[in-house]
Amino acid sequence: MPHGNELQWSNFLSAMTLVLVRVSGMVAFAPFFSSTALPLRTKAVFVGAVAFLLAPLAAALPHAHADLSFSALLGELSVGLVYGLTLTLLNEMLLFAGQIAGVQFSFSMVNLLDPTSSIQTPLLGDLFQLMGTLVVIASGLDRILLASMVRSFRAAPLGGYGLAPPTALGIVHAAGGIFLAALELAAPVLAATMLVEVAVALLGKLSPQLPVMNLTVPLKTLTGFALLAGSLALWPRFIEARFAGLLDLAERMITASGSGAATGLAPGLGG
Image 1 (cartoon, helix red, strand yellow):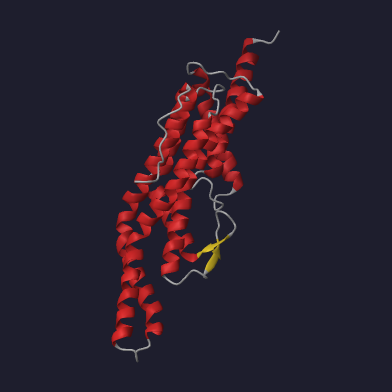
Image 2 (tube, rainbow, N blue to C red; image 1 turned 180 degrees about the vertical axis):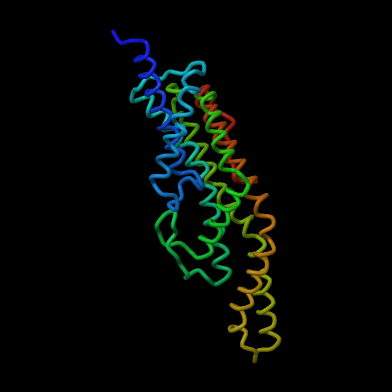
């Protein structure tokens, strides 16, 4: 018969493994944590430290089952992926907003290697993502995400979570809000460059001898950069609001799946 200390140690390792799987799913996709700029060893140490610290707390909560099984591991991974996949929509929104601005700046053919996805992305798409990451770090949104992850162990007890179809549907609806949010973020630049195009077109009609084709691109680029620099003051509030909406959506999806609810899941990026 195993001794009491051996049972406690076995339960602790089981709980730590389940917590490790949940946190790993979040770190794999969530903004800032998923960045390839962070070394893999650093991420592994961070995830291990968080799991070590949270395991006793998570195992002591009501309805927690620190028993290793395939269904328990799958459930913990699902919780982490719900957080990660929902919040990664923020990066996708910033990338799409950068693509819209890049087209208006006549930078649509200027591509760089995206460090987060290792694929070719427009120049301004990378810029928008880097600025969004800066806002996340400066505003402490990464710490808010970790606090929400800790609260998730109460909404979805350890080893007892089951992924429900409304959760996947909620993520799909949230992904639809990427387009509206990106247009809202790029709206000042979009409006200013369109006005420049209209003004240059009218100038070309009034003075056909002017080389309006040579004026369009520089004027659009300079005007767009001026508006972009002026609108940066509004970025923190905008990104914080979208991050809070996505985080609230993730928490509601976790709670709804944990309680068996099937309604009340709304997009977290639109509006």
